[in-house]
Image (cartoon, rainbow, N blue to C red; front, side):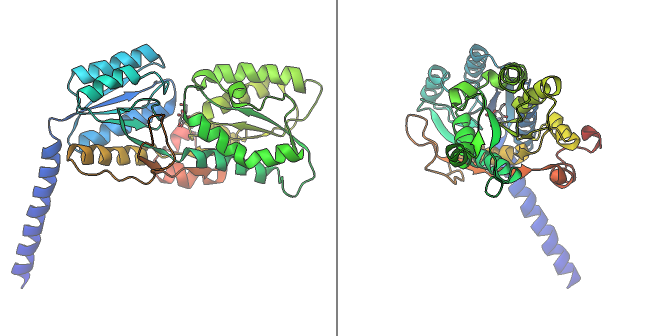
Length: 354
Ligand code: BGC
């Protein structure tokens, strides 16, 4: 009986191995192009590294290029990927509207394109979109401010300012509008007041999501509207890099009680700020999960099967709805850092100075 059992186990292992080998064998020699916007921001380094690691583990060859936030560089890198024979392109665009021409070449060559994290606009070459639920990111930030200021119970009014990201990034339409869907009723009722009057997306946008630009705009706001001692209660910051700019401006130019500040990405610097108490929350988007989802998408495409999709309504890129997979973002507060970011292996305790 024991012998039969061992035989069965051995056979099962052999079959499992064969399945495994044939899985990677199918991927072998296939080249996947991964185009990332910049190495300046921590998250894209993680995204690129996770994609490369997981694609290689699945047996693919990878051409990973970063474009230094320069649109012509990204265009020429994608051209290179097409010329090098990439069979699928995974692209996190710098500017959603600038890749139409080069992607027309990809389409011509029959190369499927996955828009990664940011939707590529006005191009019918985009096959699928994989991202986080960007609207929900904004909603979580708005809800955090609502709850932290107790907008439903407290008398107010409370002063708030707004800052979002690059106007060429379609995601800001979801981050900002999602947050505003929660906060607008309080602005309308007068419980929230924006002393600078800067509430329009185009006005509160930040080119390239740059910390310096966020800081400069905020220094202006502080000197123009808060120098007389006006209290600032909250700043809706769409992500961590803009939040850091606001924090820098506040540290040098504001002496009142520290306001509630949101963020997104759980970048190391912002996570440390949360531990130090200068950022109230961030939104954790586990780039390992997104990369894993995109690797299964690539495999399905190359094997001629249907990739897993969970949204066919939200993301119209101007040529129609792009079938999407939305991963789930998680609101992270300082008390959650250990479990969410350290215990899960996303960061080591040492990286956070713990
Ligand atoms: C991403 C955010 C990121 C921002 C700046 C957005 O498209 O979704 O996670 O913070 O770009 O890089």
